[in-house]
Every structure is written in structure tokens, then in C-alpha cells.
Length: 286
Image 1: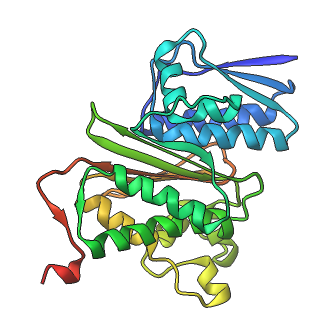
Image 2: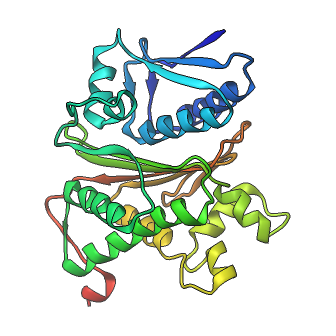
Image 3: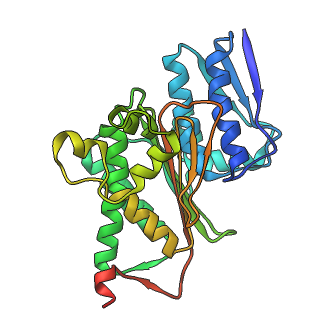
């Protein structure tokens, strides 16, 4: 038997869309059918922030012994994006690449350091900002820590997926990393029993806090805090979608508890175009 799930008209980076994505994973898990089609034919826009999540969703469903296919054959706009982002090439194993120059191609990220470093270089190259050498090195390390946490720390059972896209019409670079592991709230609450999920995410965002640091003594917990500071400086965004929490790490720190619990964590970074400033580390500004 086959189940068809219709994707809404728009999936923007907002609370309503994250609510839908959480329920989508639950519906795939709970349905009796073992074959599911995600029908994007009526969807006019899906934010690049969610592409890594779609890939992770397919992998998670396979673990549940279910097959998930993405259908957008009747929707040229969305199909064009799936091709340009690399999602189409990945799932259909094409011999000709459809990826364009605005993409950090969709990928299942290898644990190999060299692969991750090349991938991060591509992200920073596409970022529409000017960085000092020291600031570039710091941003590289901050993004690396996200990948390191996702591939090692989170105990991902079905892999780690990533994708990014420069959106010239919005003057934004958006990239996401999605793991299929334990999830930030659940990891933090293992060592902080009784803590609410939103508070667990807030804890993970505080400089120097890391569940892995508590177990192996390695200095960690800087990447998320530094990225939060950087995106605030850039008027961008850092968004965490993990277990039963959607958390927008803006200056106001909006967190929402979700009725459905997802596997793993989706971290999204939005960098706005800024052609008028050079980004420096705080110690460089004195």
C-alpha cells in the first residue's frame, strides 16, 4: 500500500512550517503503509533550510523499513530547486550534475575530516560577507564543531545530511546540518534530569556548555555560542529544531515546544549579504 502526503503551498522558516515538519515525521512513522510519497506538486516554495531534513527523513524512514519518495514532477519551480541543490542527483544517482554555482550541494556528510573541511570551505566561499583571516578561521571552527557534534556527539544512526544555497533574490546564504541522532534536548537532559526541553536547548547555547565536555574533558561548547553571536551581528539567524523544540536563537530567543518529537537535530544558519563591513573578532576591534 502507498500513502501520499501533500506538502503545503509554502514552507518558510517559521514556526508553522516547523510544526508541519515535525508532524510529517510522525505521520511517516505512524502510518500503516510501507511506501510514502511526499507530494510537492502543490508547493510553490520550500526554504533551502529544509533540504537536509528531507534527506534525513528518507534515511530515517528506511530504518523504520519504509520507503519515502519525493515527487515534484508537476512542479517545475520546486523540481528546479531540487536539481540545483543536489538533492535530485543524490537520490536518483544521476551521471550528469544539475547543481549550480549557488549551491553547497546536498550531501550525506562523511566522518572524514577532509570531506567536512572542503564542505565548510564551500559554505564560507558562498557567504556574501568579508571576513578578516582570524574571523574566517573562527567561523570555520564554529561550523566545524556543528559537523563534529552531528557526526560524533549525537550518535547519528542513519547519517548526517547537509545542504546550503545562496539566494540572490533575498541576499541570503542559508545552510543546514541535519543529524539523525539522540537530539540536543534528550542529550542534555540525560545529564540534567528534570530540565525542560527548551531550557536544555538554552543550556547548549551557553558558552562552554557541552555534554561531551562533561564526559571527556575536551574543550567544547564554543561553536553554537559563537555562531549565535555572529548571526546576531549579521542580523542573520541560527535556528535549532531538535526533538520536541523549535528554537530561534535571535536576540529575543523564541522557543516553542512541539507536540511531535523528531529524531535528531536540524541546525540552520542564515547569513545576510553585507558588502559594507568587514567582520572582525572582538579582540581585533580594540
